[in-house]
Length: 374
Ligand SMILES: Nc1ncnc2c1ncn2[C@@H]1O[C@H](COP(=O)(O)OP(=O)(O)OP(=O)(O)O)[C@@H](O)[C@H]1O
Ligand SMILES: [Mg+2]
Image (cartoon, rainbow, N blue to C red):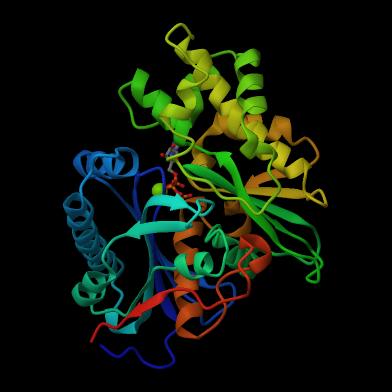
């Protein structure tokens, strides 16, 4: 399949650490801002989610488990792309390339031999969609001594920077990551993971209630923050005080992290309220430590649907105007998938994908491997 040389249509596939499913965004970059042609989410089945969780958390999974799921995910991604193209009535021949982040199952940038692993076989995606696929975005940055994360800040700068005000963006996925976009283009963009986003909220909700997440944070809002627990979690955890660059994962801020602080005697509803406060406060603290305080804070990611979390974030950042990226013309659920469409475009056009000041890679680099469709 040879898309016309002038096509500027790219697709992005994102499946984040919450293990909720796969997001696709298809954008036309021939105009600025790029036009979002189609966006959709496919939830993982319970079975796939559990197998992914096992891969992420269990030390006993085998290489066969890993590579079987890698292959299956590749097929799942491809089927979802084909479905999305059909339902949006987009001719695949017009899509220049797609960028697939893959599913992170390990992110270990600070271990003695740093590594990060995303699965979802891009060979299968390219073959089954007929679309050139770009994948493996993070490992070049790791090879250059960087964190390999976060990668979205370059896209945030492309789309959301303003000449009028210093802006911060926070993506509240499983983990929360913050980007500072100074109005002055000479000033450095800053980006790092602040710590847990939804991951502990989903875990605690799932162990006490029969739902994947606490819709709009209603359950949490009915509890009381346990101040001593909040204080313990924040003071005992070095990550929150580390200077950037820093990135983390749900394999760290997971059930065993939480079990250091919470026992069966704790009131479940109050713990949920406290975990919301932990996410809100660690984001707010990270903002207050930025070299310049942003005037506005824009939220994206699934956490943008958690009304109670947004209320608590607003309460903890009284000097910032708070809105979701909807106010900037981009649906909060599809910023990250759009970032991987943009990163695919950067790769195809041999443009830099990372910001070394953010990831601390030795240098700027072209990110991702290209898997040709035919
Ligand atoms: N209506 C809602 N109310 C509360 N929380 C919600 C709602 N909808 C989504 N969420 C939360 O958002 C999460 C999914 O967010 P998202 O897809 O951005 O995370 P992710 O896949 O981990 O992404 P990434 O790692 O790329 O940032 C869900 O697991 C849930 O916690
Ligand atoms: Mg997701």
